[in-house]
Image 1: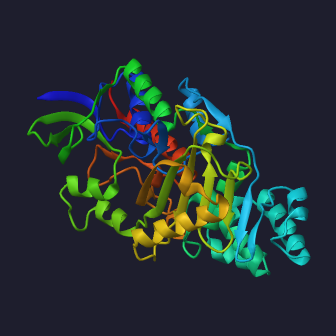
Image 2 (image 1 turned 30 degrees about the vertical axis):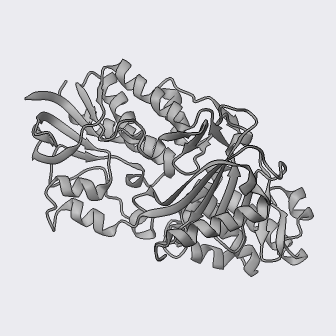
Image 3 (image 1 turned 120 degrees about the vertical axis):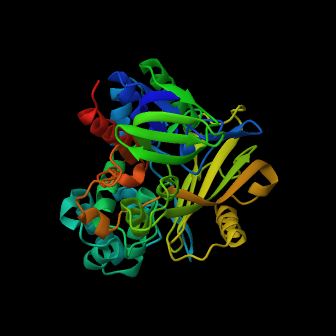
Length: 426
């Protein structure tokens, strides 16, 4: 039987980050990934010479994720996103008010709405997020905005930053903090996120970790220091510590799905954040002046990521990402969601269907397995520790409450590694 100090299950951002930190400190670290490539939701598909991320991704300039990457000696090659775009309303397509000048020029709001929006955006930029952690986003918006259109615009901006469409459940403080982090600018990665993932995997190997793909885990058993991972082919691997950097529901199944266990309780309180993504590669952009847009009344997002990032083999081609932020209360309907996103694109890029090279529709992407609700943010219990299974640790963006999305994935990987290192005997 193979023996390791740590076995990491899952080769996404969290798992690979944890592996780098663990291996750098001398722990014999094995990473098992069930698919044929690394990255999980950070992977990139190539179709007809175009690179599609698993939904639209951006790396925050001032986020904790980029700081951790730089700490590991990585800084992905990327293009800086330029603010600007369109705001779609029931009355038509307007300028997106991303600055004071654009706010004055846009025809989307009345004069009184513009005055209120300017005041509220000042509050957003100066807010202390910690003071609003126990307010839902809906409560915060209702308290700070009187005009309905201003409220709708705030919801659109917070959806953009958090990728969540659950204002009556998500913490306002979390959304405010994420918006402020995004205010420092974001980047679209050249070559898609797979380029960054592959560099992270190489960094883990250089540190001494062993990485294996196509390794499906079917069971976890034991406690520290005698733990065991069982693979689908029957092989068993012994280890002192296990990092489950996977869907928490899957982790619960691997440990036996004990009804009243810590993992069972964690899974019960988690609300997944889901979205529908339409990715389109075009020979040319019918309207080259429209690279970004939000909808005021509907939870839609549009962006031409290839405007600043190299995502095609032919520089004349473009890659568009469209996204619908799904509510936890939505009834799944893939055909409806695709039709809505295509209709949104019709408004922004009339005639786009005549330029299509290829496209891909993903009806239900798991943005994160756990919405940062008021209840979860208010709990001070660490969610990456499993008290009733000593030696088992959880990693993933959903385990972190002081960051979101990719930033949270990197933070989770580092924090989980640090927890193991604090108790490991080298």
